[in-house]
Amino acid sequence: MDAVIDPASPPDPPEGFETALEHLEGRRIAFLTGAGVSTDSGIPDYRGDGAPRRTPMTVQQFLSDELSRKRYWAGSHQGWKMFDAAAPNEGHIAIARFEDAGRSTGVVTQNVDALHLRAGTRRLIELHGTLHRVLCLRCGQVYSREALARTLDELNPWLEDPGEVRINPDGDAEVADPSQFVVPDCARCGGILKPEVVFFGEFVPSAIFRLAASVVERADALVVAGSSLVVNSGIRILEIARRRGKPIVIINRGETKGDSRATVRLEGGTSTTLAAFAEHLIP
Image (cartoon, rainbow, N blue to C red):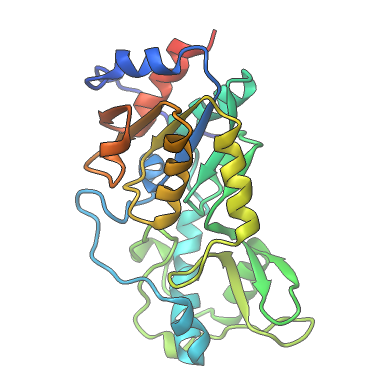
C-alpha cells in the first residue's frame, strides 16, 4: 500500500490538542470523515479555502435526459483517472491504526474515494457510496469502475489527456463537448448505468444509515475529521453521539455546523492531527 506522507517536520498540534487527548484516552472511537481528510492525497475539498464554486449534478438531472448523463459520464470518466491514482495519506493510515489496535468501532465516511479501504480500514460505512462500483438502475447488475473505464476509453478515443482537466472532489471534471461522448448501456438488460454514489437530491439508504449509526452507538467517543457537516447526514451522525453524552472532537480547517456541539474543536489539518492522535493514544 502506498501512502502520501509529508516528509517535513510535523507542525505543532492545534490548540486544544491535549484536552482532546484527555477525552479520547482509553475510549473506543468512532470516526466520521469528510473531504478534508483526502485533501492531502490531492483530492480537492468542496468547501475549503480555494475550493471552486460549482453545482454538482442532481439525480433528477442525471435521470432526466441522455445529454445530462453524457455530461456526467464524460466529466466523471476524466476525473476518475486522476481520482483513482490518489494514495492514502497519513490521516487515513492513522485511522486504520486505531482499528488494528482495537481502539475504533469503525469509520463512517462521506467520501467516495475508497482511500480508507486502501489504507487498511475494514469496518467502513461509505455513507454516500463509492465511485469504484457502477450499478444498472434497471436490473441491479454491478460493474467494477475499472472495467467500465476501459470500455469508455475504447468508445471515446478522442478524449483529451486527463492531465489537462481539473478534478473536483467527487471525481468529476469539466469536458468541453460532452455531446459526442458515448456511454454504454447495461450489457445484461440495456438499462442506465449509474455510479454507486448518492447524488445530490438522493437520500442515504436507510440500511446504510442504520449501520453508520451503530458504529457511533458502539463507540465511547466520536472524532469528526475534515467535514464541514453541511450535509444533513453528517449532522445526524453527530447528533447520535451528542444525545448519548459521548465526547465529540471535531478537526477541521474552517467552521463547521457542529462546532457548538463539540466537546473539543480543533482548527487545523486532519492528516497531521490524526497522526498525532495515533502516536499519543496507541501503544
